[in-house]
Image 1 (cartoon, helix red, strand yellow):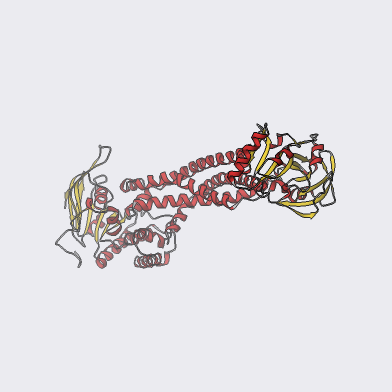
Image 2 (tube, rainbow over the protein chains, first blue to last red):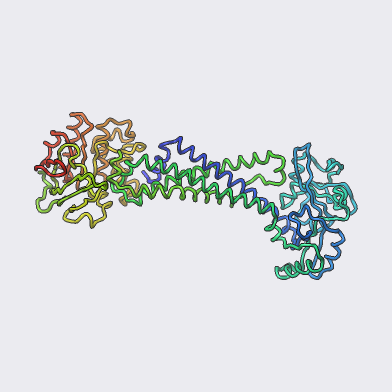
Length: 374
Length: 227
């Protein structure tokens, strides 16, 4: 018999209690995995949105918390292009539209000019790019096309206007794969914001951090009322992303706390119930360290069981989240491997936190006194 | 006394042992001195609460005396690793057996061996051999709840012998057994004493068990009344 056999037998001595504790842990771990997974995927989607296109700076109206509410004159693009250090400029309008018939509450709609640098990283799977001057045509992201059940040549209704699908595209960013791209002029008309854009993206020349910082300052000096933000800072500053991350970490902290208390309670009950038995083990020559290892081992196995169940529950939970129309196209239905690894670490941490006190208590039992408990 | 008996130095010695429990109200031992020779079998008898079990715990390194000294082969117990002492030199047998309920008989016998360097296979082989010696080979894979009380005590004895101790301390080992089973257990213990040169110290209420020992120590009110 191995020591681990003894630990596992002890753990399943009271099956119902062990399984209930593991179930509690599983819910906590699943909440952590789903929330951190969503935040992680959001972050990755944002990162690929800018970095995959070689964008160094994003220009928006100063003081706005969200790019969607930014409004700038489209003509500023020419002034931006003349600033030394700017290699390329692209105007962009972004908004959110719903497709009620397909039960999609919100999908990102991008208004870009034909040939814009924003098309980098966008792969046409079917159909063609739209041409300069073309109106009311749409390139559907793969995920949105799937959700809408549309293909090239079909017509879709966007905010009451008919658009013809000219392409199905795939992008490195889920935001784009879950949304659609239309000509900038079409979106400006649709939103009643002719001549306006929500922002500009800039590729610096050359792209080294020092020159990008200098360019950022020059843009804000030359064009009052705009905020130039480096792409990597834009990701870090995005309010929704920060909130998502904050919620994920707050949930993690809460899960660790609650999970630890659950394990602590179960393991303390175990030690109380088995006081006499621990006395016997000590009488048989077991050192305090071995008793402690046994209780910690039981706690770790309990944590591992909860973590495995939590991972399964998280995958199921993610599928359930995707049943919610708002989530479709914004959330990737997978939990990244590093997040699963973090789940394991959380499980390990709460097992240790919950198991260490009962283990110390068990090891500290006086064998003679413990035997009298029987 | 048996063939392994040596008279030069006691294997176990208690000197003026006094034990007051932490609440200060119970003085379980009030200056008990005892010597046990190697290979000897000693029965400790006396009414309930006279301090028999406390004496056994002090000699077995389960507890420390409030005052007085315990020696094993001349070495002061307070100066050696008591866990190591219990693991290597002492085998405990309890009235209620105290077998682990989720483990089979074979696995229960291996429990004390975790404190040795023996690999798992050797532990299993040794345990199987001990179980055979106590006549329980056919029940080796049964958990305690599937065994009779006599069978459980046999397994407990095999467990006590797992690490080849020099002294076996038994606290009412036949207290839960009928007279036939009691005789079988006594015969088993005596057999091990003879074959292994074990020293036996048995706490008992039973006159039959006491009569089977080389020597009887009578206790009353925390003192040795007579030998």
